[in-house]
Image (cartoon, rainbow, N blue to C red; front, side, top):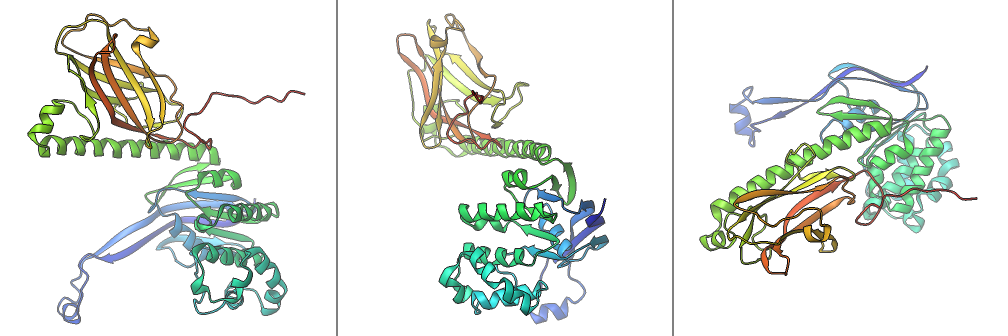
Length: 424
């Protein structure tokens, strides 16, 4: 197998001064005393990309994706390790890189394409094709300083693909284009791939990786965490992101709860008593014969959770306190989108799956969802307890929230279980 790119044990570090000197006097008096911090952006990267392969680099901001791509273009050089690139490289790394703001679009085509290795004769032959693909119309004769970011991208991409590269390197810039031009670019990339060109893309658009790439590489903290089929790597990456988001949401909730107990006034404390609600502005009413003391979300292992993936199980835990003995108690839940669209609601009386008559003291009721089919978004939860005849004991409206993540591209609020079948 022939390779287009070989990355052999590559590491890259950047230096920065933690006590930057602001004046000439400071620099003279403190010469040689500056504190220098070294950050290793990439560590021991080994990567072989076969000729004609399309590879997507995924990972969070700061994981080293763009640095690795710049090393492949030889804009940056590794501090350790070796890099071999075989073939003509065309790169699209930063909007406007290589463009002069005072030159027109046409003038920048000639300048940029010549930097990428084309002769004037070759540029002359490709000029109409470049202008046509960019769809810039009369703006092609205007200075690029008046271009929008989308127009920059149109021109830069048109020039980059005109070089007829063996290797095309793209760093996230397609994200600024309109959807129609993005689709046009994706089709062009697929065309280049079909011609046996090697393509490396850095993107946060997981669907683009699955559409274009044969392989995905996940970078985390400067190291390769996973390398394999786009679907498998992206699912592993999404699972990681879900876990990180869950930690963040729980941390935010803990801070909010801490602030609520230490900052809020006595009047608010008396009104809400011991309830662990997230927003004191939300509506709460009822006579508190039965009181909702706390509500929290958990997974099927009863681990605290705030961020769920579409299709996962979810438990809603409702801690209650019976202040006055009563019978025919009904607990209910309601789900709303963040913009107050009511999605679903039910209660123990409607379901008739549990009989609640003789509750005493404190306890916890669990609402179990085997498969949460909400699509990505933030959802607000209503929780209520009342008498079967409608007497309100405790109602909390929009007081609790959870988040849903997914790599599913369906639109709407909820995903319906479905299948497709061709008949005749």
